[in-house]
Length: 309
Image (cartoon, rainbow, N blue to C red; front, side, top):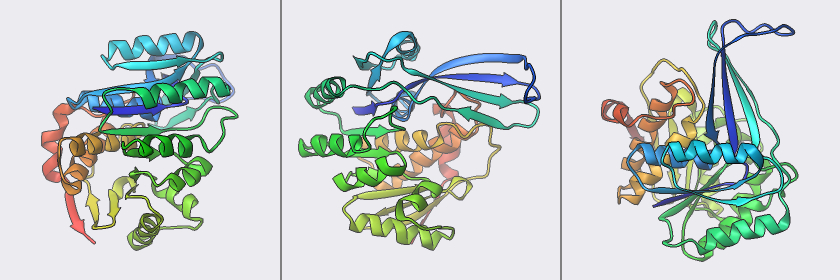
């Protein structure tokens, strides 16, 4: 089973327009709502690929109740801790005329110490223990940047590895707890190591530096250039087929979902990486709110290439 943790989930509202005009009234072609947040997305991917998952999230207000209903429709098991504030509503505007996508992310509610303590207690006491916990996404408004570091330290102390996918100070502090795996993208890794990166060799050096600091596996997603996978024993580059990109939302979450599901089934890192990358490519081929599709995987897997570094 794959457990996921989302401390700042969202109801994502996707608005489709045809020719967005600033400072004027715009009529929506359609409006869709779907459950968001990196951990929740990973659970959705694991579910789509035929795996068993359980999502944990802090939810509040009517948006929180709406998110519960949305996940129920997707048959995704969910455990929540109620908070006094309201779960955020993000807005994604897709312009059908030029294919651009504008995302407006809300801050999220203020989470009290007692609410966070109860959430941590629920996670640590969950049985049976998951194969892995996937934590990710932004932190809620005023939430301390050490949240992921403290959660990972407590979880891994009890024997369950953690995957972390976040950015900024939360990622910088998170790696201090030496998670099993982190998945920064090409921009996040640069911010983490404090310098501009561009060549594959630059990213490889940065990944190896993080492994030396105690992170077991570093996955650096590079968009159309694929991804780098770096661990103590091996380093390799995974290239992907060029496809028409319809949405970049959830590509990284699909990578993680496919990767950890394959690992939970006893696959080696290289084989798991191929499934993760196939899921990621499937996600960009699909319009939001759809992430990857299971039926795409058999067609994509033979086109995923691995090169040892």
